[in-house]
Length: 303
Ligand SMILES: Nc1ncnc2c1ncn2[C@@H]1O[C@H](COP(=O)(O)OP(=O)(O)OP(=O)(O)O)[C@@H](O)[C@H]1O
Image 1: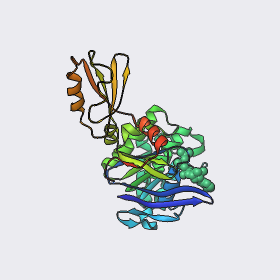
Image 2: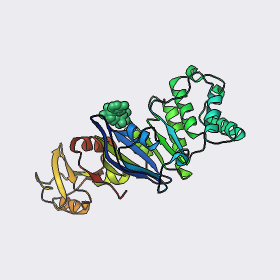
Image 3: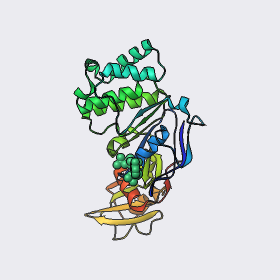
Image 4: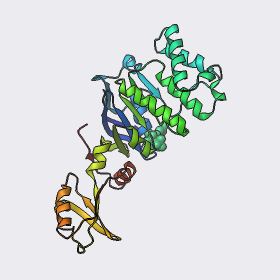
């Protein structure tokens, strides 16, 4: 389990992180989202020890992350950081050996990951000669080549074509299924929604929303009702309804988190026939916008 606990960080007068707190469990894919400058990269750099926190602690399996524990983390930094003039295979073997693998294991691991990530034919080429998307595949191979127990990836999907997105998604899911905690940042919210078990939304250096994707989406639900004989405002007095509006011949109702939709259904049926009663769920993008607008603290499920 990877825990970021009460981490704060300033760059001079800029407050980059304020009491940043979240945990990623073994076998969990955690999506880290937030506006530009929200503090995602700073958090990841602190996890990897590239930066030191002013306050708070990062723990791996309950213990502060020291040099030995840090070696168990696979990291894809935002600034990437491969050696442009070194050949792909040589670079991966070097990184694996740097993390303690024997020469034979490093060779086998580099071969396995370049094959898995579709860059096996490029092992002899300098990194700078690869397209950006292929460099990114190599960057993921670099994060994985020492067989880490934990993955921390800063925007691994940016700039990838749809096929590469599928490869990257499959590999991340695979590592999770093997029991690793995996955290990655992304601005591609549809992808995060589809891929992640849990998400955290960061605003101004603080985690403002976190929870299971399905629970967060279910918690703020709405209902579209088509009850043609219902009088205007029929839903307004139903318990649990926080807002309702007419949209063409439908009523669009917002329910409070956890409200019973059956009370609404009974109220609709009491007005006459009901031809449609559909639960709608906000997308992660809508939840994100809401979190940016309001910024209140909200917990989807216990962290
Ligand atoms: N080296 C630095 N010196 C001064 N301020 C910095 C430095 N690095 C980051 N910051 C500031 O810290 C805040 C958090 O930046 P950070 O890069 O962590 O955000 P981010 O969520 O990763 O953003 P993005 O989505 O744009 O990558 C921002 O206000 C940024 O301007």
